[in-house]
Structure formats: structure tokens, C-alpha cells
Length: 444
Ligand code: MV4
Image 1 (cartoon, rainbow, N blue to C red):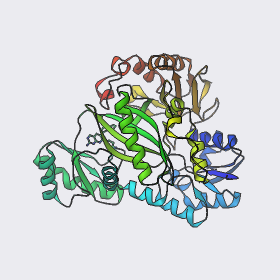
Image 2 (cartoon, protein in one colour):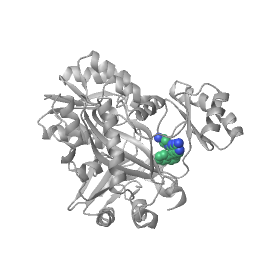
Image 3 (cartoon, helix red, strand yellow):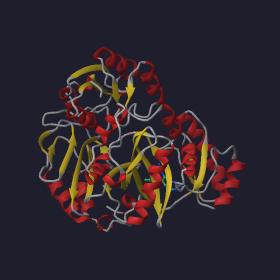
Image 4 (cartoon, rainbow, N blue to C red):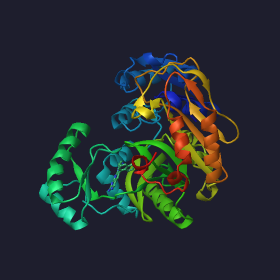
């Protein structure tokens, strides 16, 4: 096992990783920017190294200083958390070159999955269902038209190296397709440095369901079931839950088995997530995220597993000592992301000093956060300040518990999304479980 791990991140996820390390008896190194000198992750780690200026590009994304911090402190491994360098292939290569273990999948896996057209090809090969569309990147408008006529309108044009909803265009007829095709290529080039785009059938009103997998890097892979992440706004998730409220056991088992078999086929190492669109009983693979995700905690709660400890153990070369039959869904878990944003003002980010902070508590409640009374939220980073997770014997109990949790939460100094979440917990489309990715546009 590692003696010391550096956490190349900040906020709640840095703390989440530090906690796992502490429980495993591993020493921790925090890195922090000049804007984060009062941050909790810095204080909770055994050691801390300042890695640069407030702007992420000069600190949490600045690879030379992070590698130097690992070398100076003697950290043998780096946990990247999510965001920042977690899916940066250059960073993985540099860690390797410096004999530092990157806690995550191999460079080759990250490279393959960053190419969404390639990821789809791998999925098809592993009998994971995908949407009809182009085989890889589309050359030109004529090619695009041919494919669109085959699959039928509407179609969606996506950047091969995009993701998270950026650089997508929907075309409802040939005229729109010829109009958007080159625009999409140009957007892809300027946003992702590569003009490749692919085309697939557009699904009008899907759910976003994702399957959590865990691989040992040697061909054994397990699933920790699925999460329904359909409550999103502008491609930002706001609420996640596990299990998905509308799946039956046969559908659930089928898609989860296929997801794990893909992970096994590519000898996936560590924690990963396969994202699907779900519509009228059918799943369609979108992309695979090769990192720990914000919402991993809901899977941990229903599966009674610690994903971060598994990531660390697997990276250290330990065996994945559990089997699929050891992972059963117990009850129901929901997460609400508490952002320092004003839902009354278009969810505008709202930094400020946290005062009179009261966090909820009680049975089956998990609060993952980094704020404390007197803490000034720096304006440079993500607006998420806490995750409230609850577990219930069933979904109804989890929803009632979340309402109770949200009502206990108090903070002054900035607006939060807490009251917005309370409204969602009372919304009929949410409580009946049939909400889709269009839910927030159409409701609340
Ligand atoms: C789609 C789609 C409909 N049909 N692809 C958005 C994020 C990116 N990962 C994929 N996205 C979508 N791809 C086809 N063929 C609709 C979306 C989409 C979406 C997906 C998940 C969650 C929220 C969303 C909001 C708008 C569009």
C-alpha cells in the first residue's frame, strides 16, 4: 500500500479523498492555491503545499508545481479527484515519467474514451447498445446527409472530443444539417482542438442514467448499479439518485451487466461511469467517464462500498476482493448539490462569507462539504459548496428525509440552491420518478 498520497484537487472532493486515506492509514499531502490558504482541505491533510496563484490555470491545473509538490513531500501517488487534471492525458504521462502512480485508469484507456466515436465503437463491440449513426467521424456535408437519411431525422451532431453537452447541434431536416455541419466542425476545432464530429439519431426526451463500474485493471469488473441524473440544468447535474426509480430488475441487471462486461473487456482500472440515454425502455450508451464522479456517494450508500478506498487499493495493486454477488442494492439514496448560486436570478454564482452556518445531521444523512462559519468562498472555482446525501429504506423515506435535511440547513452570506431542492422534492413529476432531462425546463 502507498505510504503517502497527494490530492491534486480542492473543496469537498479533496476532503473526501483525505478521509479515505486517513482510514487506510495513508499520509496525505494537500495542494492549495493562494486563494485557498484558509481551506479545510489544507487543514485536514498531514502536509500542504502552496502550488500557485488563485486562477486554476496557475495552480490546480499547473502540472509542474503539482509534480514538484509530490516529489518534495515524497508522495508515491496522486489522486486527481474530479474536474481539473482528472481526465488530462498529458498529466497521466507526466506522472508516469516521474514514477508517480496516477490513481485512475491507464493512459490508453483515457485516450480511447476521450474520443467519443471510439468509445461508441468499443461499446458496440462489448454488446453495449448505442444509437444508430455514423461509424466514427463524418468527413463532409455529403457524408452527413447520407447518414442522416439512413437513420432518419432528427439527428444530433456531436464533437468527437467534446462531452458534457458542449458543441452539440440538433438538425431536424437536410437544410438544418447542411447549415449546422460546418458550424459544428468549427466549434469542435476551437473548443476541443479537433474538428471531428459524428452524427447519431436524436432522442427527444430521455432520462440520463449512468452505471458505476469498478475494474481491477486485469479483466475483473463489477457494477455498483445505476444512478438517475436527469435533474440537470445547462448540463449541470443538480440531483442524483440510486437506484433509478423507473427501471425494473431485469432492465437494471441487463444494462449493468453489459456495462461491467465493457469494463472487463478493456481491463478497466479503478472507478468509471458509463453514461446512457434512456427512452421508452431502451438504453443508449453516450460516453464513459474515466474519473470518480461528484455523485459517487449515492452509489456508495445503496451498495455499502467505499469507491475511493477501492480506487486507492486497486491503484496500489491490491486485489478486488469483492464479487458481484457481494454488491446488492439496499434501499434508496438521493443527493442534492448545494451550490452558492441564486436560483431566483438564473442560478447566478454568488460567492461570499459563510456565516451562521448550520449543517443538517441525524440518521442516514451524509454531508460532504468544505465550508465552515467564517469561511470566505473564493470566487475562482466551482459554485458547489456541499452535497447533501440521504439514505432511506425506500424512495419515499429518502425524499422525506431530504426535505427534513434541507429544512435544517441554514447559512448566511450568499444564496444557495437549498430552497430550490425543497421545491423539487415536492414536485409531482419528481416524486413519481418519471422526470427526464427536460424536467427543469418544463417544471419548477
Ligand atoms: C443526446 C441527446 C439526445 N439524443 N444525444 C448532452 C450531454 C452529452 N453527454 C450528451 N447529451 C445529449 N445527447 C442524442 N443522440 C440529448 C442530450 C442532452 C442531455 C443528456 C443528458 C442529460 C441532459 C441533457 C440535456 C440536453 C441534451
